[in-house]
Length: 115
Image (cartoon, rainbow, N blue to C red; front, side):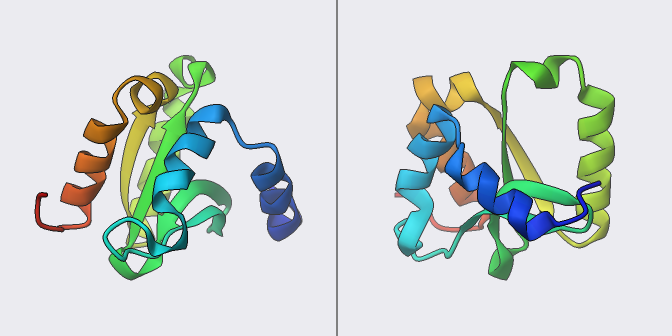
């Protein structure tokens, strides 16, 4: 648990991964179907990668470390779901190699029409 979540979130925004930068370029400034996303958002005791509060949607991008911390991620997802959020997860590789499919899955999670 982070004692100063907003400061920690700010530092995470400054040190984002290439996959986070790639997805953020498509989500920021309501560019994605008018949905307003924020990045590195404190929710409960966690900081999520991307959040659309109006849709109660959290988007997480998992790096290689998530292979060995799946129990942590499962608990994190349960906590976020109990706070009323839907959680969708992608790997760094999915974002890098097939961004359009990632965006399509986010569109489905937002319940937006296909384009």
